[in-house]
Image (cartoon, rainbow, N blue to C red; front, side):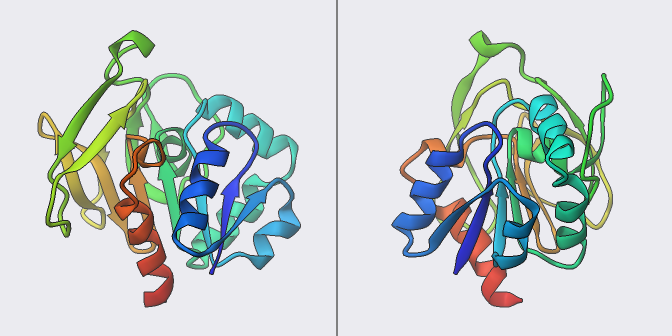
Length: 189
């Protein structure tokens, strides 16, 4: 399986390491042509405004949007969740708008307010130890969006068809089950 990681800014290397540890080929995606040769896409954590501006500058926004709309299995983590969302609260920014959620950026506070938590995730037998860094939260979601995990009753892991989005950073743990969810959706398709 060839799994692309949007490689403009953020936790690119960490995601590539997880992909390769699962026996798949990780592709650092920097150019639109690279989107044509992948079986799945990861949009990493980082700074969502910066990633959105760079994706626009490198002419990746529309090609990514098109591939995702056509069914490309996609995982967005932290900033990736924001970029996948149909809307955000606060300032406007470039969005792919393929996931029917509204996201609040930095919902838990600043960098100093970062935390870790054990999450009960629908479909997983054991809790997942999640790392939240300036994390977003899902403010609202359509009925088509399945909530897989919550913190304080608010969604932090969601799925809509072939798109999975997490408020947290699964690539910063030794637990590869979120990445395995993405690989499973490739197999299902």
